Amino acid sequence: MIKKIALLTALVAGLFAFETATAQKKEIDIKKEYVADVYSPSQVMVATRVMGYIKKINVEEGDVVKKGQELFVVDPNDIYSMLNQARGALLQAQSGVLMAEMAYADAKKDYERFKNLYENGAVSKRDFEKMKLMMDIRKKQVDMAKGMLKQAKAGLSMAENQLKYAKVKSPIDGVVTMKMKKVAEMALPGYPVLVLSDIHNLKAKSFVKEEDIDKFKIGMPVTIKVPAIKKEFSAKVSTIIPSADPATHSYIVKYTFTNTKGLLPGMYAKAVVNIAKKEAVLVPFSALTSRSGIVGVFVVDGNVARFVPVTQIAQDGENIAVKGLNGGERVILYPPANLADGQRL
Image (tube, rainbow, N blue to C red; front, side, top):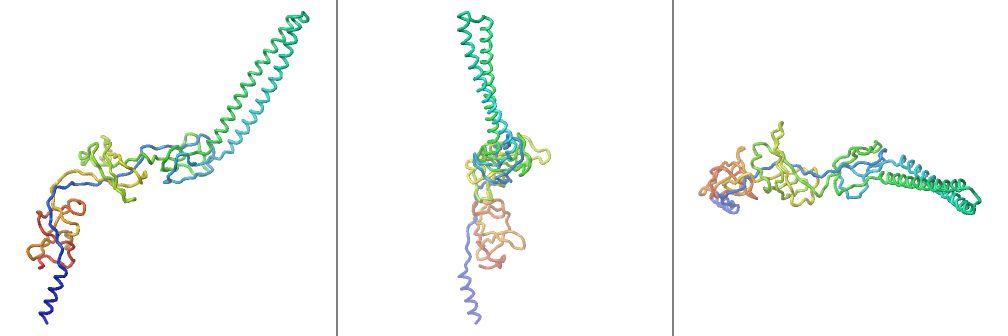
């Protein structure tokens, strides 16, 4: 009976033979991650050209908008009053021109009549000159009336433009990053209601501690990870601002993307930077385990499994760079939880 159990155990152990891999020595890139933010260097403060209460706002923070899209509307009641006044002034000016032209036409007829009488000696030169002066005055009155008509037309055009300005549209393709007014609040010319960021011109930036700033060079490649959309973007260091924040002793480093599709201003990101090269031993991630809180791997030593504590240095694809191994060791992959140091294989 005991022999049968031993044989069965050996068969089960053979069925569950351990999978192994060889620890490889290799020069790897040592990478470090820095917290980054995606931002737009091109921001537009959108304000109204007319004063009035905000009637409606069609967008919220975070909304993507297109150029020409209506953003908000200012109550145009005051503008309608201005428009009606301008229309009344135009009608009055048109009537003034008509009356002035009629008076000029009458004065011109009187002048022509007196001219004939004067040439025939029927009226005095003084009376003739009075008629000519009156005609000239009426002509100037026509010119003045036409000038007032021109001003009235300009006033109407301005009032109509004011009405057009009551509907504020987006000047760019962008995203709403700040909403500074609410419906029913007063909008004033020159004071922004919304802030838009250009979504076609995005960058990222990090705050880098002074002990790491020497690792950054203009033009060096950087990988930007954006967890929200689960994507990685290629970028380059474009700016290193050579002035540290005196409170945090951090420098601002800016990155320029080669492609920004899917990115939006304000997204949280991580900038992955190669800070050095180092020779290390690589093992598959599946070889790592822990015993009594100590991270290590099981190494095949003849027909015995030996637990070797290791320190993780960096990740290289699906492998982990570790300290504690020399390279060339056979490590056990997916070691079971009950595998113990010194256990026979």
